[in-house]
Image 1 (tube, rainbow, N blue to C red):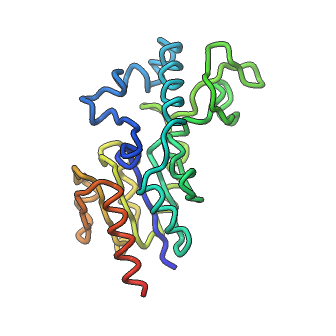
Image 2 (image 1 turned 135 degrees about the vertical axis):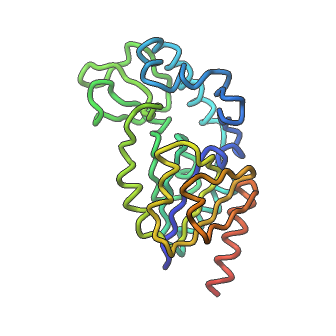
Length: 232
């Protein structure tokens, strides 16, 4: 049973109707990223940051996994599959994938500003004055630009024994996530699915890289078909 590590980015969720800031001239739902996705923004204007993520949470609860999410979940039946996602939505889990690492946090969770280990399920709005059990303000459980990525070491470990790596819907321009393919074994097969693929340094050093310039749903279906034929 080959181990498949899947690195997903905003492009896979775009087909479910979730906007990506890189496709909108550097804006995310009309906001500059530095105004809603940095620690500095949180300290400067916490009300605006909270409202921004409250709206994103509402949007997420009104969309569904698309064909790419669902097809990836079917791989769990016959393969050892690990999904490492840069996305903060729960669409992989809703589709049925069991082993999902969220590098950049989770929109449907809240975290204490004073205790990083206090994390709560959250499907409602977060407001100023909403406190954790220790009396600290709650914030979105999101890894903002400039913050440490707590799940990075675990993601690297998963990548080190991958036999097949699928990179899906990622711009491959946001680090450290974009560097993960460098940790895959040299014999690993690497597939990159994106309608506008951008070959970064790490991908450029993989001579066996296979690029599929397609939407996530079409590219994932093609790879699953190829794997199915190979295993017959």
